[in-house]
Length: 351
Image 1 (spheres, rainbow, N blue to C red):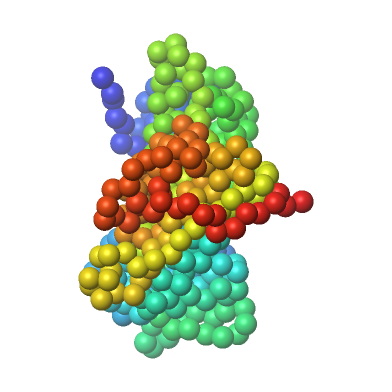
Image 2: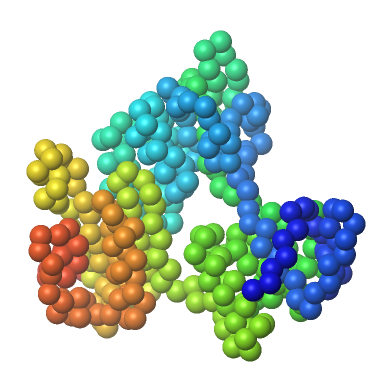
C-alpha cells in the first residue's frame, strides 16, 4: 500500500482539504480524523508538580514514594507497576471504589489483592493542591490531610485531541468533552469527514480503534458497508493481579432481567506450591431464563490471556450448559469456567 506520511501538524481547510504546517495542501475524497487523546490534568494549584502517563516513561530512576491520583485502569496499573518496582505506593481516588464501571465483585478482589501486596488505596479522597517541599511534593486532600511523595502521577482520565484541527469552523459536531460526534459508520456531520479511536470517546481501547479503522476501510474502499460492533468487547486491566472481563457486569445484567451468578475464589496450584496466599476469582453472569452467559470476569495470573478465549464463546452466545459440556483441562485455573455447577446466588431483576 502506498502511504505517504507527513510528520507535521495539520488543520482541516474544508470538507476535502487539509493544510500542513509547511503550507502544503492535501486534497482527498475522504478525511479520517484519528488524533487520539491525551491525559487530563486536574485544574488544581501546583498541578505542574505532577506528571502524567506521558512523562512517567521518561523517569531516570524509580521514585521511593509514589502517589497515584485516580482510580481507573491506568491509575491502578501504574500503582501496581511502581509497587512491583519497589516503591511505596499510595493510590488516591475520589470515588468510593477503584475501577468504576467494571464488575464490583471483581474490582473489590483486585483492590484487596493490591493492598495485600503493599499498595495503600485511599477512596473518597480528592487531591486539591500540590506544593513543593524540601524533600518532595506535598499533596493536600479535601479533608485537609496531607501526604508527601517523591512523585505524583495524575491518572485522572483522558480527553480527545480535537482542538486546533479546524473541526468546529467546518461545522463538525463535538460533544461536551470535545469528542468528535459520529454515527455508526464513524461519519461526522460532514459526509466526507470521519473519525475513529479515542478522539470519538466511544470505547477508548487500542484494539477498538483498530477495528473502527477496519470498518471504515471496508465501507469506503471495499464497498462493504460495515459498522463497528461494540457488544461484548473483552478487555484486560494489567494490575497485579490482572483482571480480564467481557460482557455484562453483575450490576448491568440485573437491570435487564433475572440472573444467576457463578463465582468462586481459590488459591491456584501455582500459589500453593509457591507458598503464596493470593486467591484468584472466576465469575460467570448468566441469564436465569435463557441460560446464556452474559458476562465473564477473571482476576488472577494471565487473566487477559484467558478472557480473550472466553470472549469468543460469549460473543457467540454460548449458554452455561455449553460451558458445562466442555471437558476441563486439568490441572489449570481456567477449568473452573467449565466446572462451576451450582449458582452462588440467583437474583431477580432490579426495579
